[in-house]
Length: 321
Image (cartoon, rainbow, N blue to C red; front, side, top):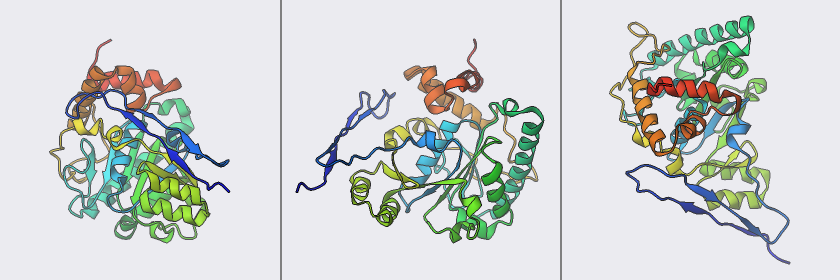
């Protein structure tokens, strides 16, 4: 009896040096097997369109890098809640809470809740079209700790879980813990159902073992870009693809975000330092690739949203018609 096995053949075409521009990285694979089974990864961006996201992985598994890449696919301003990060942890993004400043995180979460209410009211009065190009991404590093330290964290989680996606507010929560209780969701299955769980590395393998699918386990072990979205296999971008924009962004000079006493943490201006930095990076990338590539693959505006993305790109880069 032939043993069940398969190999994944990957060819990566990288035409330019690491310190220059970037051509498309062609990623192709063939499942070679002698049984009836072949892994068919689901499309990550398609699967998470209607849900919020938890990324679960051990230290060093790439959670933060993946979260930042996903934030650019959604588009719009990004707030990162991170109590331990260094200035180069989140290049080009606004970080709240460094040096264990949980008070600033709590205040910003309160502002997020007001913002969510405002978005819901606009949608109720004027419909979905009124929220076009108002997307915002909220990333929380080690969210289980924030639940313990920030009084607004539980309400922030629950309301965004139930209402956030329709209000164009996308949560990306990061943790190395896979237990429901650690997230503050014990006994709240209805809320947990609004999240997809993206498991990386060893934690993906551990979950696959529970599914009793030996070939899925071996597939996950075979490549660091292999992961699980809930119970489904997913092929992640390579590290080079994940970082092709962020490598061009300088380290932010704002190490610790101002509190609400002097600055509204949820107000963003197209002339702000972060927008200027992002605009310059996107303009440089567009020269190497194309504006269309940036609008679709970096800012994440595809299909019927492309024209909105084009306008947003022009505003960020100050490009004239």
